[in-house]
Amino acid sequence: MNVAVCVKQIPDPAAPGSLDPTTKNLVRGGKLILDDSDAYGVEIALQLAESSGGGEVTLVSMAPNGETSGLRTALAMGASKAVLVSDGKLAGSDALGTARVLAEAIKRVSPDLVLAATESTDGYTGTTPVQVAELLGMPSVTFAKKIEVDGNSIKVERQTEAGYDEVSCPLPAVVTVTAGVVEPRYPSFKGIMAAKSKPVDQLDVAGLGLSDSQVGSTGAGQEVFEVQDAPQRDVGEIVEDDGEGYAKVVSFLENLKLI
Amino acid sequence: MGIGRVWVFGELAEGKPTTTTLELIEGAKSLGASSVEVVLHGPEVDGALGVLGGTGVSKVYNVGDLGDALVGAPIAAAIAGQIESGNSPDSILFGATYDGRDVAARLSAKISKGVITNCIGLEAQGDTIVASHALFGGSQIAKSKFTGAGPWLFVVRAKTFSAPESLGEASVESQSISVPDLGATGAAMVINRHVEERSGPKLDEAPIVVSGGRGLGQSEHYAMIEELAKLLNGAPGASRAIVDAGWVPYAYQVGQTGKTVKPTVYIACGISGATQHMVGMKGSKNIIAINKDKDAPIFTICDLGIVGDVHKVLPALIDALKNR
Ligand SMILES: Cc1cc2nc3c(=O)[nH]c(=O)nc-3n(C[C@H](O)[C@H](O)[C@H](O)COP(=O)(O)OP(=O)(O)OC[C@H]3O[C@@H](n4cnc5c(N)ncnc54)[C@H](O)[C@@H]3O)c2cc1C
Image 1 (cartoon, chains in turn yellow, brown):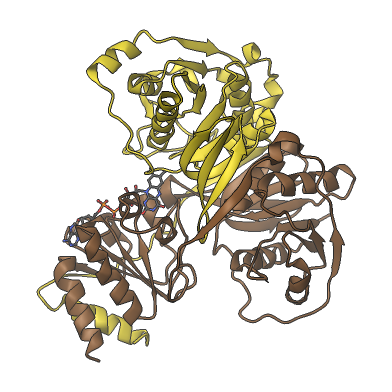
Image 2 (cartoon, chains in turn brown, cyan):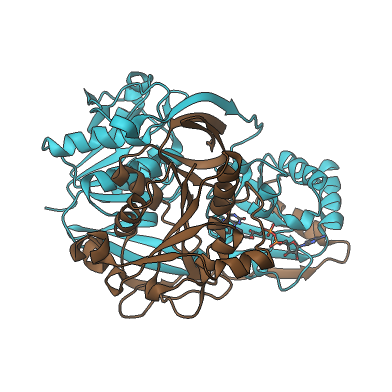
C-alpha cells in the first residue's frame, strides 16, 4: 500500500513566532523543523506500509526556499521519497491555496491513502486536509486515533464529542490523525545517513499546473490587517505553600460564594 | 447592504440545539444580519423547530437524516447546491466542532472560497465582518477579513458568544434541502458508536473546572482531581500531556486541540501553562494554579497561585472541603 503523508515544516515552536509587521505573513526565518504533529502521521504511514506487505511512504510538503530539513527528519524515520513544492508565489497562501498545491502534488503520487495531521502546530486552521480530499474527490475521516487496513478499505477510530466512532471508508481516502496516538520512531543513524540521498522531487506553481491567482496572497481572498498583543491578565496573589496553602484556596472559593 | 443573510451550521444533541449552535445564532444576530437561518440535519430536526424559532432565527433548512454517513461531505454538498441554485447566504458560521470543521473545509473547496478559522470574535464593520483569532497560543490577536465576494465562511471557537440563559418557543419556517450525488466523497460510514460515560456537569459548561497535568506524577493520582471536582460540583479536565499518556480520555482535554472552557473558577494542578493549554482556559473568570515550580508560566495568568506540591496541597484541600 502506498501512503502519501502531508507534512509541514515549521519554525521551531520553542522559539516564539511572529508576523511580518507589513505583510502580516508568518515570518519563516531560520531553520525549519518537521512539525511534531506530523510525526504521528509519518509513523502510522510507515506502520501501514510495513503491515500491508510493503509499499512506499511519500512525503508531500509545501515550504518556502526549497527547505528540506524537516523532510529529511521524516525521510530518516523511513519514508521513501518526498515531493516538495516551493515557490515565492506561495507566500501568503491561505488554507485553500495550500490545499490546491498539496492536492496537485498528491495527484503525482497516486497514493492509496493520504494522511495528514488534524492541525498544524503553527497555523492550526485544521481545514487543509479535508479541502485536499474535496479537491481530489476523495472521502475523508478526521480526528483518527487508529487506522486499520481491510482490503480495499480502512477502518478508522474517530474521536467524537462523546467518545469515538468506528468508521469504515473505501480507499483512496484522506485521513487526519491526532497527536499522541502512536510513538513516532526516532531516526536511527543509518536512517539519517540514508535520508541524505533519498529523492526529493522539487516543483513550483507552474510545474503543478496551477495559476498564480489560485495560490499565495492573491488567491487567499482574505487578509490579516491588524495584529495586537492579547490583553494580559493581571497576576493575583502567589504564595509559597507552607502547609496552609490549601486554606488560601478555600477562602478564595468562599469569597466567590462557590462553597 | 450591511451584513446580509447569515447561515449557521447547526447541530443537535438529544433532540436539542447544542450550546455551540445557540452561541453561533447569538453571534449571527449580534452582527446585525438581515436574517439568520440555520442548516440542520438528523432525524430530530422537526422536534427542535420550536426551540429554534424561540431563538429568533427566520428559517431552518432541513437536510434530513444522513443515517450513518459522516456529515462533512453531504452537508457541504447540500449547502453548495443551494448556493449554485441562487439561494446564497452572505456568510456562514460553523462551530469549531468535529463536524463543523469538516463541513466548512469541504464547502470551502467546493465553492472555491476561503475560510477563516479559529475565530474568537466576529464584529460587523460596515459591510464587512472582522474576525479576531488567537495567534501563537493566544499571546497575540490578529484581525482579518475577506477581501473578495462571499459567501464568507467562518469557523468560530466555542464560547466566543454567549448562548441565551433561557429559551422560549416559537414557530419557524422550515424547508427541506436535498443532498446531491456525492460520488466517492460520501463513502465514509460510521459502523459503530462508542460512548465514554462521564458523570457530573459537562466540562465546557461546569462553573468550576479542576484540571490535572503531568505534575500529578502518575495516572492513579488523577483520582484526586476527580474527587476535588466532585466536591466542588465541577468537572475534571486535563492537559494534553496526560491525555497523550492515556491517563484520561481525550474528552477531558482543555486547550487548543481540546475544549475551550470559561468557568467561574479554573483550578490547574501540576500544569505548566503551555500556550496551547492556556488558549483553552485563559477566558476563565478566576484561575487558581498549584505548581511546585514558581517560574511555571501558569503563574503569569492566575489570580491565586500556590507554589507547592500537588501531593500535599490537594489532599489537604480535599480534607478541608470534606470537613465543612
Ligand atoms: C499542536 C499542539 C496542540 C496542543 N494542544 C494542547 C491542548 O489542547 N491542551 C494542552 O493542555 N496541551 C496542548 N499541547 C501540548 C502543550 O504544548 C504542553 O505540552 C502540555 O500542555 C503540557 O502539559 P502539562 O502542563 O501537564 O505538562 P508539563 O508541561 O510537563 O508540566 C508539568 C508541570 O507540573 C509541575 N509539577 C511537577 N511535579 C509537581 C508536583 N509534585 N506538584 C506540583 N506541580 C508539579 C511542573 O513544575 C510543571 O510545571 C499542544 C501542543 C501542540 C504542539
